[in-house]
Length: 117
Image (cartoon, rainbow, N blue to C red; front, side, top):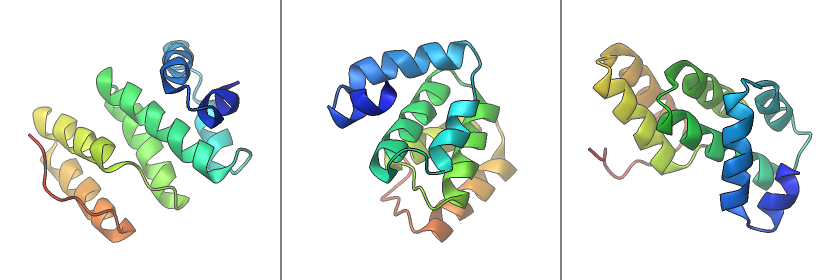
């Protein structure tokens, strides 16, 4: 269902579905997306959408899990999501983790123009 919504650029509907899935604590979807069962472009969009929902709900552990899996599998998160993650870590005073995430962002080739406050 999510693949169809994303392929048709129905991101609002996809967001609603992802938010409901996350609310039910169904994290297996992340593994399906990073393991290549869905097309690359769709996977990246859905994973980015998941990151956005996790950051919006301040679900740091889940956010970092998705981020780590994306980076490990060569699926690069959106720059805005990278900034959102860094902002949450900063706001929670998790400086060491923020530095680690910043390093991973740089090593993966994601170009942050600047850290948005």
